[in-house]
Image (cartoon, rainbow, N blue to C red; front, side, top):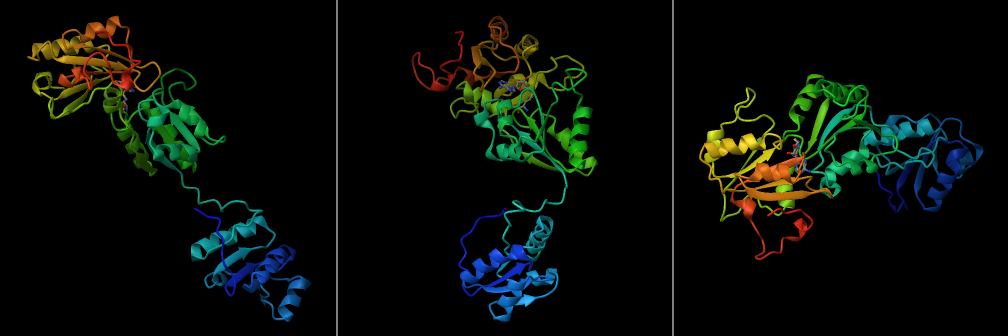
Length: 370
Ligand code: SAH
């Protein structure tokens, strides 16, 4: 990071790099500020030789060497060659010497081009729910690999030169395999780019962030993780449902419903889940909700246990349906709720912060069906 600063230079040693015409104006300004000026440069112009002859500055008639940079209070690159000035800025930085960034250069020398991948959890969809670090990463990215559920309006903060790759809609088919996504991340990072992998919620909550990290690590690509606000907690919160409440429950359990109970790919212990007595949060479970709720009741969960389904949380289309574990599947279907949606089962699903018919402000627009 560089700052513009107001420096008192009177009596301080300033090294001007360059003794050609481009150095004249900075030298004059420095002398006017009573700085103690040393000029290093081969082939000085006559005015500079003259100033040296009159004892107003010290002239060293040779090209700048990196050893020159260590002792000055301030370095002023003024060679007239933007590339050379930029090299001097880089050398000064290495020497830990304060250095003026010449206007012609306009910017710091390019950092060595080592790419990396930043796994950014974008929150549940409302652009206000991405973290400051996540937004900053989007601003800096050279490439953004985004998902359907990521807060896409955030992409307007990317640089105009940033390449945005929507892996939900890559050429030749709507579905991009995880292997292909991993390969895209690695390829761009190895080409020296800062790659942001922008996801909905948190990358490590059913977000395959762990797999992407492994794929990068295997190829020696550096990875940074910026956690996100997961919809597992945000969707219930936005619907006015506290996942824990001292009077109601001492925990919550988050599960994926992408395969139903009894499916060969299911590894969950449904009997244990039915008995856990924590709030149950079911993600990716709209299609399997009838089978899941039936299984929980079969294993002894009371049919009147409160339940709620929240769809499109944090988006203008957010809707909530409430009921019980016995009827939430049917209510969810008949209300036409579609993914992305989360079902919460447990006493907290019947929580009302205020008595009577008024609902908390943040769910005023939600469509309650009971
Ligand atoms: N990594 C994400 C989850 C991805 S899995 C996260 O941490 O939020 C996709 C599932 O997340 C959806 O099927 C749904 O269950 C849930 N989900 C994601 N965004 C949601 C939203 N805005 N509202 C409700 N559920 C959401």
